[in-house]
Length: 84
Image (cartoon, rainbow, N blue to C red):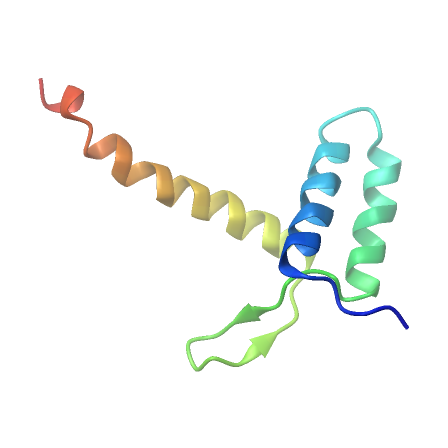
């Protein structure tokens, strides 16, 4: 059995799957996503008590997309250009 992927490897798998989804290789993306979920290569989430839980590729995608929006929001709100 292969060793668990590092954080960087898990993130790379995610980025590859998202890249494949955005182009003409949708079938390849579907197979990769299935294997990521089957082999539990998607980073687990932590609840408010610090307990780990499995999550789906779709859940991770929604959280990452939502999280990126939150990261960008304060920087645009703090832009001095918005107050001129």
